[in-house]
Image (cartoon, rainbow, N blue to C red; front, side):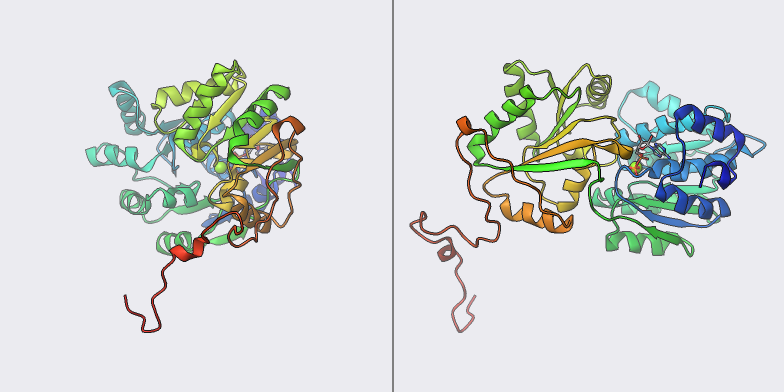
Length: 408
Ligand code: ADP
Ligand code: MG
């Protein structure tokens, strides 16, 4: 199937051509005909499969056939970064269409708020917003949402994780009941089903979430003692020649420590975490995207949805708590059929969790030998109950079970 087979407007085909999109990805091929027909759609597919275009193109197709300018679509996104990224994709696709957009995501100064207000008063074709900031505008009364045809929830799983359920319901109160609802997500927890039941109308559903990293990613792991991690990380980062490398760590503190330590060792590294202001985050991302910064160390705020091209290496400094997050982190490399590599450090307490990931992705990830001078690592024994022998007191003694009488 080609984009032309879908009957997309010529202005969009020109835009796609300019962006080098040759044919639709599987999720695009499956959902676009239904969206173009006017149906509600729930689409679940892993990160990096091209979900943005799957909804933006049909939305833009409708807009490019309209006669006068008004806000036709509202896209809700969990984070500022994702809102900006969707807006960026929008700029590309809509280049020849005359449609306009505004990303509404908070932070910034009074001027930003005024600019958002103006765009929404004048009826930007598409509003791409984070829920909280949008509600601030809605409460002030000037937003013109009375002709909205499309409501898109992007990264719906993430929005619910972040506690936006009530906000989403509230926002829906401001838009027409007769509208087309499009819900995109990388995973499909039951919370999403609830939301869908509440707001959607007989949705067509596509689920191609296989929870597996893209085929082009080579995945390996080191089984390590925690104390071996810093030196091993430094070794790998200095030896690799990739123009862009992304290091993930689970806590903000670890991210800050790694940035400081590695910078001291002369590595070209910057960090991104939730303590940075919006401007700081953007400047770090920009510098990484443009390859001025070779290494980025980040918490999981970056692992979902953010699209940075051609990352040669994703390195998990620790095993993420949630197996799905592993897939999201590793999904930062090998986007859209390129190749990349993902290396994970399996620390002393991470073995069980890593084996859960291996089960989820239905694949045993090869364990690499430690470089000899860094000493050997522990054995990989994820099924081992509780370490015995070396511990003088077995750990299970700490768990006091109630006696036979069940006294509390
Ligand atoms: P998702 O939202 O599913 O994580 P994105 O929409 O961010 O994925 O797309 C991932 C990457 O693939 C982006 O760089 C995007 O430009 C690219 N892409 C999407 N669709 C196509 C296509 N049909 N042809 C080529 N590249 C594509
Ligand atoms: Mg996406």
